[in-house]
Image (cartoon, rainbow, N blue to C red):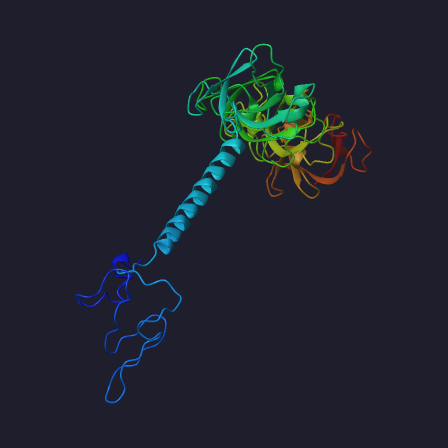
Length: 413
């Protein structure tokens, strides 16, 4: 903005210092000066300055003031413009603030993301880092009955409660809750690597240290299934799982925990080639004198296996299964004799020796190299049935059990 004191630098000059000039009289024109009312010409040579009207005549207009000043109207007009603009801005700011105040949402109690503890059936808010916070709010839904049905859209929710309201008010909101890591008995909080003590086939699962003397199960994964008992192929997507525990959760759906034992001797840890002691039915070293069985196959099925469980499996004579009534996962282990020289493992063309004596039991025979002096027979045929007819004078027979039975036909050498 320029300096207002300079606005009138080009105003007409004041009257000459003429002693006969009186206020109210028009100022005498100066040489070479423009005069209001008509243009003046500078006086040079023959031309004298001319003015209009001639001196002494009235031009019909009031005389100029002695000291003419520029009207203050423009300055006042600018002041009014600035004042009006300031008022408009103030009103706009006030309107925006008013709208924000009117539209601002009130703070919501129990918002999504906050954590709570449960005092009986009433949620109480705590910081999510507080060990009392057993649940995290994953959803807020309008009240429906039963309230659990409002939270089934949240796969991690395991509980639904109504949000607390003032005394006398009607509940209108359902809080959908997922367990936090502080929750040690809700399977919905479990992660791979956790270890749990399991009771009632999964009806009770509690997080414990993995080196606990209770020899817990180690969690590989968790799954959500429609109901208990689970009949929808529990842990199928976790093929290394040897156990599946189920627990009823929100709305009757089931949380399935896929796990393996932490006890290295547990039969659920069996792998092909491992050996087991029949009496304790636990894994042992194959060189251990108590070893009686050798693992031939391990597989998981999703129903109780039909008998014979190990039909057609070469050398099988026993089986071990793991299952429970809460899920449909069944682990089936087929086994044969621990001693790999047992005649049950023989194939056509191999030689069989005998321990001597008059024993006619198959258990007294064994596989030997045909060059061995004890080799008395050679296997001519294997028939998958008990006591089948052979064209040879000798045979070994095995009763049905996990197989259909077996007849090994032997020819003398």
